[in-house]
Image (cartoon, rainbow, N blue to C red; front, side):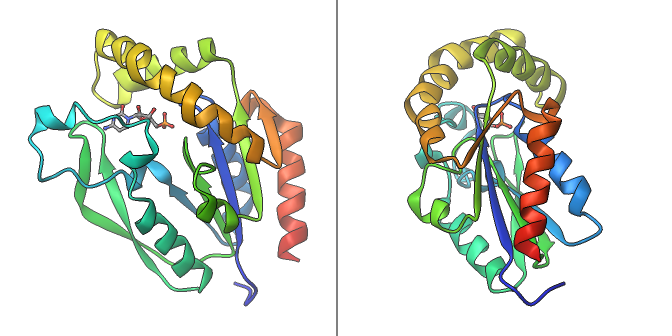
Length: 207
Ligand code: C5P
């Protein structure tokens, strides 16, 4: 591990855009080196004090759903080369889990999530800002499959949430953050050229 300031990469984009694929592709290249992924989703506010039904009312696509103070604090700690206790999020229960994960400081910090480019303080900590740009039809198909297979949801609930919350919040809060991106990557993880360019850039900064 080098003594230099770690490199911080922000990867934003709508739900189902392919952020995770881009993140994984970059992670694979640097995993022998020194890299950590911080998922903004894990920083949803703790809702353990609320009843389950009340948690269903939360707007999870609004900037205020996140504990951004904690996220900023953790990125700053990692930048100071200090370890953090990363929270764990439970999508089925809609709240933070009891356990957390000890994360050691690394040379490359990937910050991934729908709204990581929304807060100016977070943006200011980033060396490279990416926005993964994928059409809405592909995003809803991916989200349907994922939420049913991995997050314990029904088709009806996913479609209802998409039309009433996810889509309008995307247009209001997520899409506008594209203007802050250094690079806009069409079609996420399938875009090998864009990923190669990113990897080269990160290596240059690390050197
Ligand atoms: O992985 P992805 O970027 O899709 O995760 C963000 C999405 O997770 C948001 O669009 C939000 O609607 C959804 N979410 C949810 N239920 C929660 C927390 C987040 O459906 N309890």
